[in-house]
Length: 450
Image (cartoon, rainbow, N blue to C red; front, side, top):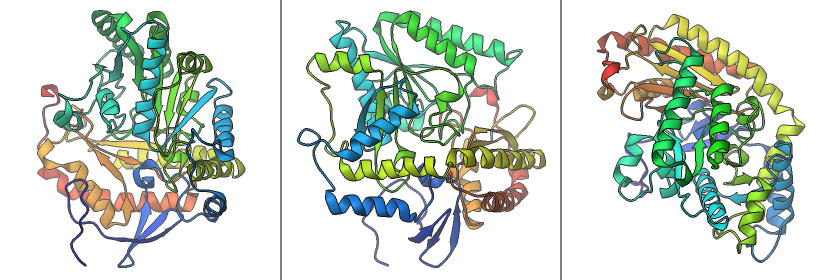
């Protein structure tokens, strides 16, 4: 094969994909892989679905692209109505985009323009968590808290005020309630020091993604953040690029917590890997204020195009028709039980956490101290390579702000059945057994120095 002209991240040469069906992919040599991470937590309905294909072909036969300032299109109208319905009309306006980074970027710009329109131009800052991930465009990167991604661009990105979120695995408070109270108090102090009237919005993921290994928040923390936003007059933006469209067992993860955002970003699972599509959902009054000021000064060429929206509409209709959210709940329980059983067997599994079909497994060199493996050992990459050799795709990252710590995500398609979930756990167990034989060579890192 001729050398490729492509470049992405550094790393070993990858096999060329041949085809895929259901929760499996095959490379050009015929080797099979179970998609234990839905690609990049996006192929939520698995591969090769005829219903999605037929919907896309039908739209291609009508019109693939129109520009939003020239025509309205029926798939966009219908998909917007469906998304609003999934929020129980709590968020009533929709702006379509093509990716998660664009969705977050659009929410930031909408929040900013809202306050300019209200005569509060001093509200130009955003608050976000460290660690976190919100995208790779400069605006979204500015609210991301993950040092390796930030470092090359820190002097040109508009950074946010970064605060710590709750960490129910590593905290040393006397109990979770006191931990949440302390984190909220620290957050209040940081906002007050920065100037509450300079804050446009607080941005966070209701369940962490790749940068935290599915680190969970809780109802009291989110209620506390909602209360701070209300008190200080800023907006709450929930980044559900990864968690939305059923990944956690509800249409949006915030619905587990009883807290409603002002703006919400979603993508990934909305197109389910079949076509890029994302969205910003907003309270109606925010949009009305911006539109009255002359319109939203923002847009992308492919925003709301018919093919993208027809694909997204077919995805959400399949989720409803096949009661896939029920499957997420059932398979989530099965996966949680299997991962907890593996944790009991392997002492270097420090924590298993997640919701629905979004699960993170954190690796530690010492279970008692929760000390991570030395960063230079790249244990997250090693276990991912072993899993691949066993025919399982998982999603790895570093846990501790991208500097150290190791975790991987298990996030299979929402359509996975009981037999394939058991097969996923079997392949993971084989990889973990091989990894276990290498662990004695590790030297724990002192977690207190991070």
